Image (spheres, rainbow, N blue to C red):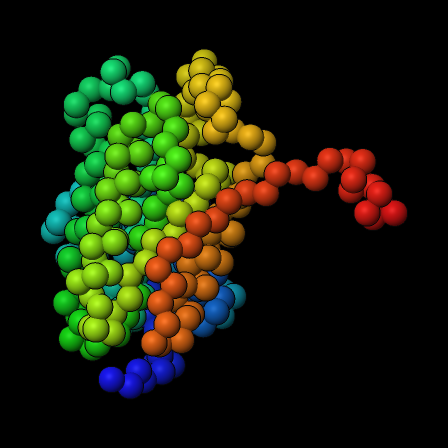
Length: 265
């Protein structure tokens, strides 16, 4: 089967676009010429970003989305496609972060994380995949995490959910083989976003000390959301017939000051 090139117009839905990685991804793809539907619960934040994109010459629309509610997901997809056309690219990145030791986390709190990060992404996938398969093209990108391969203490539910994303994507890739539709996962390392910024100081200190003890916090550098946006862009920009299945993005360790001064001198 010959692969036709991507169409000139490739509408995008970004779930979780009100802040962090989702907002950066939406802005990056809009700057690349994609019409973008911004989806999240905080519609006022979405509208601010949509206005910013539009002012810069892009095309964007804000659409409410609660990934824990199947009706909301289906309604979001319908509104997005009515506004910008059939979705060629979908990025599932909605989520939050609740931390705690596994033996102190309630079953309800654990289930909430699974429902948001894993079930929520699957709900979006189910809502759009039929149309993509009918058109024999499309890109679905799941935002995973490097915790799926390097688990961190204090985040058992998050680790379980993101490990589930890895398993889900691996299965989906097998099932979509030969349909013309591509699915991939981007695994960010430590990224400076709004997630986790509401933690109290003692919890943060205890968690980081455990990370250090297990060699999981080798340096203090963090990725910026824009780094993940570039990875998503690279994945969906691959020409048809090629498939970037997994991208892991990690922060580089800082170069020592003396070395920087020597190099710049």
